[in-house]
Length: 413
Ligand SMILES: [Zn+2]
Image (tube, rainbow, N blue to C red; front, side, top):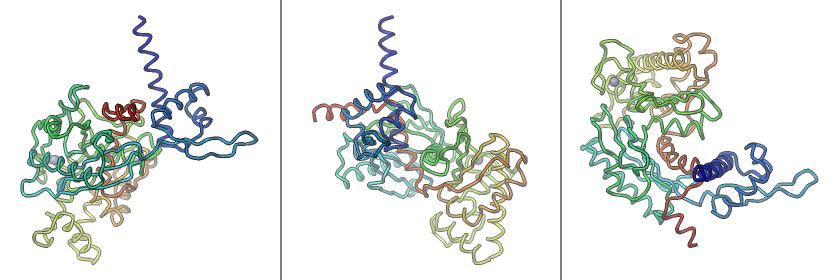
């Protein structure tokens, strides 16, 4: 029983650290008084925990504000330079690795187009490890200051047993032909850094919810519109995962029974009609040998110039997309729908009014009236930012737990 009591005290302390660290991270700079008011912790607890966080270097003083008639209040914040994060986007056409400070300011990035090897997983792992070494080298960053590497992948991610250091992470992706790829074990062979892997649409969703167009919403869907189409469903403020993490495979919902062949092998999927790859293929007039992005940009330019087939194709895409959003509205009753991903941001300014109209035409009136539909705010590289939020989330939830090497360096320094 004594052991259990001790555990509980430690858990409580960790919980308080986590609460204050999160408040300071997302809402800082804040004074101790403000922290007490918004966290519900007593002044004594706030003072103790802040003292610990200051001693650990996880919080710093950053000026003061006058208070009514009393002493000036000292402001506190999480120092952005205290640690680093790495985010990796294994996209449809390239692997992007970016190094961020703790405030998620990008310090360096490395882009490697996927060559003829496509999504051959040995090749992808090699590109991730090469990119990781590059961003650390070009910025002169000590790997011991990196909290972890988050990786967003185009597939369903099985997390494996907790505490296995990422070794159990397995990825399933029918669209890129990954059948139970042991990504965790393969990456572990090339780096000692803590590893976190999740579906790219889910990492994008987390980034938009924390820092972008989803901020403040409790019920939302963040749609990833790129080569393929995916979604991150946020219910009660948390990402909805389903039994084995595959919830949100919206791109493979059916819009046409017996319709176009999809990359997943099935027919009539949303992605087979509105994914960037499908749009460029259906248009069929992109310049020979151009990339998918260049092809989609050419399609958009043709529509802007009034070419009839391009105008018609994009109008039809907006209707499919809006109808599919109506399904999300009817199924999940979100207060907000955010459209992100490079293709969504490229086509969004032209298509958004038609997408909204189609959603209105196809959704039930009552839930549609409660839902706003907007574009993401974090740009086309939001998956990389989202991937970096995976180690960041672990750090905040754990109350500022540092990887062993970093903790040892802090104790010695
Ligand atoms: Zn499909």
